[in-house]
Image (cartoon, rainbow, N blue to C red):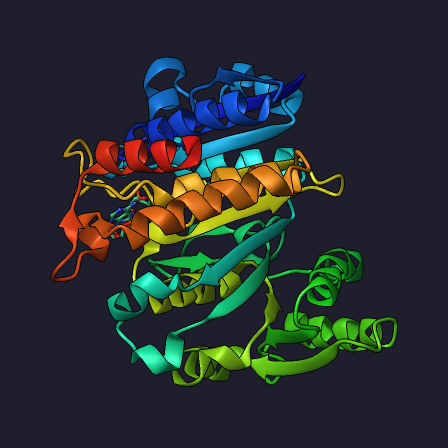
Length: 357
Ligand code: NAD
């Protein structure tokens, strides 16, 4: 019996996670999966009840689970509370407590959505890239950090830091994924200015000798951002640190038309993982029943593939999503003329029905 912990979070989180759970229930019935689920509070929802965005009870459940399906956290309601209690801190703590150091963010353009991209269809059609982002190091965790008074004014500061072993650990994941895909790996740094990424580049270059079949390239982050919109299909796997990966993966997201379509996985060394959509809690549309649940449903597919070793079930879910898009159903964020506009629940129902067959 495998255990999945459901952490719905804030904003649209509970709405989109409910649709993924619906799809999971159908998958369990169709494939006879032995999976039990449990729920735990996280983010602002947890702060409201426990005064902590990641209470011990939630962390314990997360530790005990084989995989976590996560919605999203945050919102204006919690923007002014003390920094350590903000929802985002709960998420960062969860990732670091579980050792989830490898963030996999695929950007795949479903052919049915080629028109939803802001780029020309010929530039993005058939796009299939994977951004591997280091998730538990770098400037988001480096010490010292803070805001202090200096010479009568406030000074903000953070520290970008990576050890050689941290770079090797994420590099190994990226090289192995490249080997299983198109055998091309682009490492992104800012080695001309930042020593921490000079080391990053050196270590990736050293590692390349162990993967002679992989074609390795290096780009400065500003050039990588430019290339991603100029000719995105030149990329197969990109590997980079926490900060650059955060930004580039959102940029890659928009190549596909909507951030509402993009799943992600965060894995530990044993492939236990947390799976979540790339987007945030979308407070501007929360409670309206119009959020796109497909990124969360596709995150569930990744969960089954990477943590539960059920690539067959993942394939079936991805096929069900494609079927629904083929049938012309669209949430508002991916809507184009001639399609049928549906809400969150209707989209989830349609994927569940397509999976049921
Ligand atoms: P966001 O991703 O929540 O929203 C950006 C835009 O995309 C909004 O217009 C939103 O309506 C739209 N959008 C996002 N997801 C969508 C979906 N599934 N369907 C349709 N439209 C969708 O980013 P933001 O506005 O910068 O952040 C809002 C809150 O989310 C903040 O509190 C932020 O800290 C938090 N956040 C959380 C995570 C996370 O939980 N991992 C990630 C990013 C941001």
